[in-house]
Amino acid sequence: ELAGTKMYDTVAWAGPGWRVLMTDSKGLPAVLECRVGKGRGVVVMPSFERLVSGAITGSEQQIAACRQFWQNVIAYVVE
Image (cartoon, rainbow, N blue to C red; front, side, top):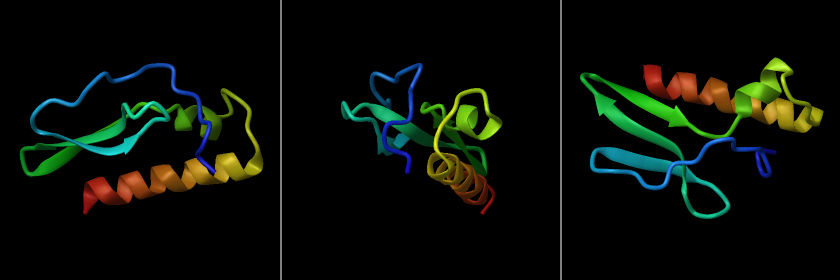
């Protein structure tokens, strides 16, 4: 369950070359990607890593969902 995850920073808009993969509750970009050489760069604004690392607390469902999110991101950028 990723809904309600805290975002400490925001992105106002995505410029040319950026693709928005996920938006926040206000419709602003939350996860973006761009091509970098032969690869891709990904910017993630929600603080999923803080739940996984234990820096902030959450339910076991939230933590499991955040772990899965990062596993998916890693798989996506290395494909």
